[in-house]
Length: 209
Ligand SMILES: CC(C)(COP(=O)(O)OP(=O)(O)OC[C@H]1O[C@@H](n2cnc3c(N)ncnc32)[C@H](O)[C@@H]1OP(=O)(O)O)[C@@H](O)C(=O)NCCC(=O)NCCS
Image 1 (spheres, rainbow, N blue to C red):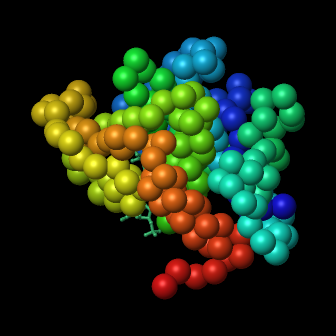
Image 2: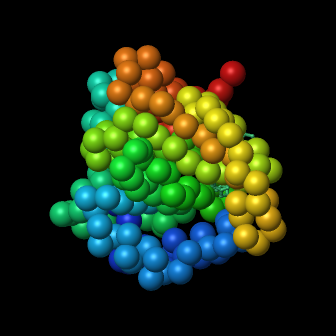
């Protein structure tokens, strides 16, 4: 069993997600907002990361594709099965718009940050983006949010412009970041390389150089 599992966000996760949301963002969403998003799976996909008590028993070789890896090694995001056991420690969402897949949220509890969980959630969103049939990914991030911008840049997002006074609470600017086309071979290869490295880190617990 892997140490972390990815699962679809379920009704039972909403209290935990709301707590993470409240602790991570100055303008958290209401639980009802998440509930509404859950009612439109053709447009919105939400995933959670769970921390499993039991430690990993790694497979000798990583599964061949990112999809099978996320499904098989990092948990099984399947709405028809029982939720993966464990504590909900992160969540992320994507919405299909007429022009792109818009990453709406991504957060990890402070105690589990810098372990690769943010990457795991982003990889799961990229899988959901393929499933939703989008090619372009976009998001807004606070201008001062260096950790998130660094994560997105690592995965190929490029800052295109800023929107002044985007955030109502403190009038902070948003940086708009985009991946123009996730269907390219180059993007798929880069994502697979990140996934391979994350696999080594999470499952085999290899330290990074
Ligand atoms: C942004 C966030 C989700 C990252 O989650 P995480 O689990 O800590 O991220 P990971 O451990 O997977 O890190 C992946 C990469 O992100 C970048 N990164 C993450 N935290 C970072 C930090 N504090 N400083 C610099 N880079 C950071 C690095 O590139 C890192 O890769 P590396 O480990 O090879 O250096 C987390 O900091 C968080 O929940 N922040 C509060 C909510 C938020 O701001 N969400 C984004 C909204 S747009």
